Image (cartoon, rainbow, N blue to C red; front, side, top):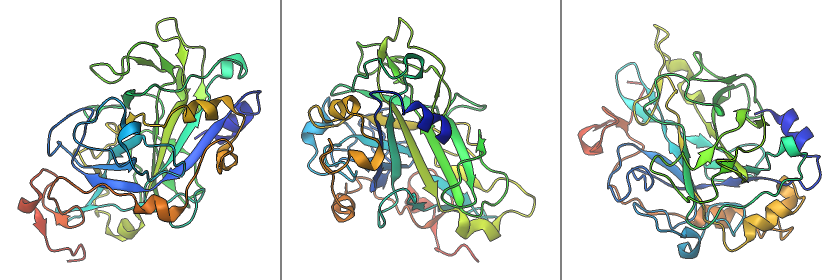
Length: 339
């Protein structure tokens, strides 16, 4: 992410920026946006946020959630991505665990770092930022992509958890000393009418060239400036660094079978309580300064980690698998990658 650009931009008047952690609420084969009602979905996802996550999600999940894994206790949104696997030279697959970002409180159970930023650089921070409405949802990226799909979908080969450069369009081609980070940025211009669209993307418009860099105002077709949502996920690939194939082939793959990374994608369903997100966007708070009622209510790590959604799909997600295709019972073998 372009941290310098973001920091300089946010010194403009009326700029607010949220950066917070959400621990894992579930890892399972459900996709209520792309495959609503289907159990199981085509591939495995890691999900954070509110406990209303299910195979079918109604208009306002903020009203139905009773707990959330996010720092802000008023945020019952759901955020999810595909899961990363390591393919061992013996042909088996092992799920790559998620590790927490150093910017977050200690003890968070995996999860993601979530951002809501005011990408209004062309107006010096003076344009109204409108919070999403109940029932709003969107996706970014597509699992069927076979080349670079769009801006803001990145991989970072971590030397440590603070590494942010260089940003790559596909998987790193060598072992990374600190793991791999995936980054997903969503568009920040809305048509103002549709809470969703058939492809879950057409109701949004992307003026972002890359990462947190905004290239211009929203077009007339999508005139409403909304917060730019972004996810960071840190994958602990370090335990596999001494297992890379001797032929140099890519050992990592996403849960839908993509070993290039071009199909990386993410889903978002809005679920903030009441006017909480709008209050935050109307304030001038940044990052941790937005917590503890200034203006958003927050909660501790123990409460975050306690919120869980039980899997509706019977699958061993941590065993070594012969295949990424469900049912898992046909592909689970001994949990020993060293053999």
